[in-house]
Image 1 (cartoon, rainbow, N blue to C red):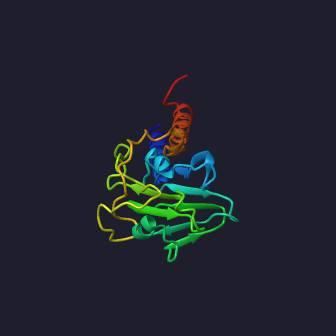
Image 2 (image 1 turned 90 degrees about the vertical axis):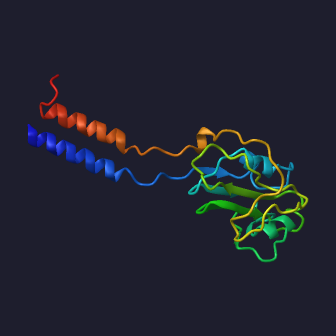
Length: 200
């Protein structure tokens, strides 16, 4: 019986280690149901501050590729709506971008006039991204505003204007829990009952 208990304990430990990998990030569709567009004048500043982003989250841009694209740009290019030298260009109409670092990540539409009409978003991940939702500034309004701090890289600096307080992170953006835990409990229960550790 002790051998069976040792086997069960080893199996539980193995399953826990196997299921203890890093949690996957949440997936956020930019603009929610509106998507990435200028139609209807979506407010991407309000959208961004209503979310709580973490490193590892995926930002999805859905749009009509005949009329829009997504450019990752520096803070200066973002503030000036300058699409001439992007860090990265996305043009599939369904672009998924995983955020790998903390700080600001600036995106805009490179089609003429679209950024000026507000088709730009600042995805901000605070230094302590595991804390409560950020209430710090995120995206600038369509008109440019003075920078609050110089940018040292494409994902640092500060946003433009003060923004309203962020809403709590939606349940749809919650990190998934490994399902290995349920499997571990089921296997342990089976071994315990089969091995006579628990009487029925």
